[in-house]
Amino acid sequence: MSKPRTVLVTGGNRGIGRTIAEEFLAQGDKVAVTSRNGQAPEGALAVAADVTDSESIDRAFTEIEEKLGPVEVVVANAGITADNLLMRMNDDEFESVINTNLTGAFRTVKRGITGMIRAKKGRIVLISSVSGLYGVPGQANYSASKAGLVGFARSITREVGSRGITANVVAPGFIRTDMTDELSEKQRSEYLATIPAKRFAEPGEVAKVVRWMASDEAAYISGAVIPVDGGLGMGH
Ligand code: NDP
Image (cartoon, helix red, strand yellow):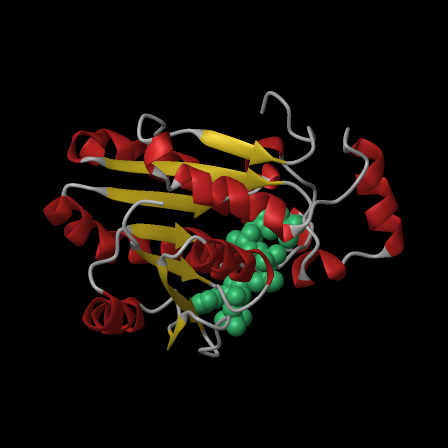
């Protein structure tokens, strides 16, 4: 393995983010994990931060830089859902999801990019969803936020692609976490019927792809959307 890098995973206290953090830890990187409750897997630096608050993100970066050094890999993973049919969706349901999933990634990457430009290297991985490009009824807010990450990654790529920095999107399908535990049995069997792989994935199947997207081997991939969805979103 190459020299240990400093990696930040937002929303890394549970679910996919936690497994991503563990994956980087396992290969010897220095990992900081942010979440609102400030918990983290063993071996990671736990920092309480809310992605809806720029000052909180700034404080978290300052602490991470002091304790672990400049952040070379940012994984913007923190995300929420607030599903409702469009007719019933209120402003708060729409705006809170955009604020966490899309503006939260903006706040995090914006704070991290200066250090990456200075270092002339960096990896940005944005955790989107199959919902972003495929569309899911009841998720107009969530799908819009996740599709927004694609334009965001591509603009970043055009701005800083010449500085040794890549920005990519990983788009998971259905992964076993707290988020999908909320699905009813009926929803679960309906979704399973549409997934060519006929199963939900484990968080580790996403984490390994994220680890690789952040590696030296993926240096010439930027602005890409990498699905990890068992074939659900093919072509979208
Ligand atoms: P979980 O609900 O298990 O975890 C969400 C994480 O986001 C938690 O760590 C949570 O921490 C954090 N988070 C939420 N809001 C904030 C906030 N304002 N500030 C900081 N952290 C926050 O979700 P998953 O692990 O399932 O999902 C992780 C990512 O993957 C999300 O972006 C999700 O949209 C995406 N995804 C998930 C899929 C799935 O099937 N599970 C499919 C496709 C995409 P805390 O609440 O403690 O602050």
